[in-house]
Image 1 (spheres, helix red, strand yellow):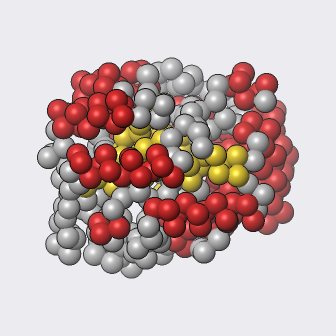
Image 2 (cartoon, helix red, strand yellow; image 1 turned 90 degrees about the horizontal axis):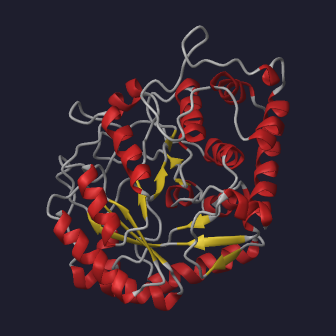
Length: 383
């Protein structure tokens, strides 16, 4: 198995006979349930083992995976669920990703940008409600230059020194990432979308590059961010093989966070008539991710709650331990529609948090007032 945790290249997935391939004798002739128990114990499998699990699993295997994942989560994090206050700062985007509702060619979108004052107001309300992490997410909007981002981050850092700051604003140069880190950004979320280069190109226009996305993720890790990646479940042309590559990539890259959610079509994109990803598949993959990296910060996403009214609760019961309620001003929430039928677009921030708190209590979980940093391996083992 190639060692990619410190440095990885596009050659992540060697086949038998190729340099870097190591046969996993412990997996030989094992059933899916035996492979799941092996993953729970060792936290790594071969690419072919992931393919077998995804291809041959039964409902009983899925239930076993969720049970093992819940046990693993409780061992490392107890019943606590971290919350992040999400601020959707702009729906302008220079890119034209084929699945995304705010792609540049979507003429239906009513565009907006939040001002620095509006962003700080969101943080003020969020802090009062108990949020200790602010996540600023947006399209790749050229208006938000490095100087503007650094100015906003500096203001948040000065006002809320006990809070974590997360950015999710796409692909940037290493120099830009270094500026953000120096200004006080703790975490950076950049979904890899798919670990298969050919599949990536099917989902994106030619000017976007899988290799560049991978380079950005490596830069972020080397700089010192807590790094989050992730992928869509059920995206067009996704196969068992591409999903197995996603799991193997997470295993090798060892991110601090991993955001996955079901693909949901957006009516103004070229994938408008494609089938949405399933709740069942997403829950199973959440469980596998927890078993791959026990101390992973793993959100139960808004998309999961969109395809099923109990989706986020089921996500928590399958190994997730993060929720990201929306702190954006209510008047712009309906304008940030990456996919159709997004939930909570009209709710007030306090209403969102109170509703989630009630739902978490119903399943025996507790919303925490905490930065919710990724625990170190030794730290999580002690607890």
